[in-house]
Image (tube, rainbow, N blue to C red):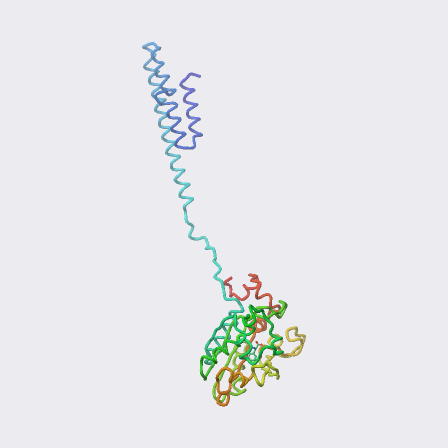
Length: 345
Ligand code: PHE
């Protein structure tokens, strides 16, 4: 094989495998450059006879042109391949479905609370809030539970000092409101409360209440019953029945514990684990505000009467949604919460 043929084959082969513009350029320099292989051959023509030179010169030039155009072709092919790859990489497929972002949804306790608040606001109640770290005076004393009163035992809590504690109910908000506002008063007090209870199926050391207070001239137990009947049918559905059982709270007289007909079995009690076969479940405490409480809070008990109630929000949500274990509300397990999210979780 003569020198020209071998240069031709070598360079075309090298070009074939060149993968970048830089490699092509290197090849150009190596073959066609001033010190390139083909240039060296041209210089060697000096030793040839005058007859041989023209024909050989033509051959070299033809080869130079061939290689040059091969280099150009390769570089054009490379460029268009790169462009193609870039276009492909940057293509936006607008038919690909989007990645769904979970929107989040109200926690079942919050939506239960929201339903309760809405129901009472529609009946003319306004919403009052107070501190969770409370004074003994508002949490107990003004509610007719003086120091060492045995009723305090049922509401043991965490004390910061002798007179500062985590509130055990939202009733202190009622006392605060009575002190600063004259009747008529019609408020609900939703909020978190604390007790020294172990966490179990039906208890939590921190839970949520929605208490209510109405004070005006001529308020009677009938007003309490009517108000709670609206609450029960709005939250548990129409047809739910109420039962008042005599009870005791130091801040109400008379006092009652109020049951609703079991939402799980409709009140029949048959094989029902929720009401344990009784057909009833307790949802709240209530009563007529003790005149002593009115007096301590600066309200004339000869002129005014009132009622109060305290609803457990967890208990209500458990019954409303048939949730068997209160702890499920606090665990933030998405599989549990998604059931209440209408597809938003
Ligand atoms: N404060 C009471 C409790 O938390 C509930 C209640 C409120 C009872 C108002 C009667 C009237 O146990």
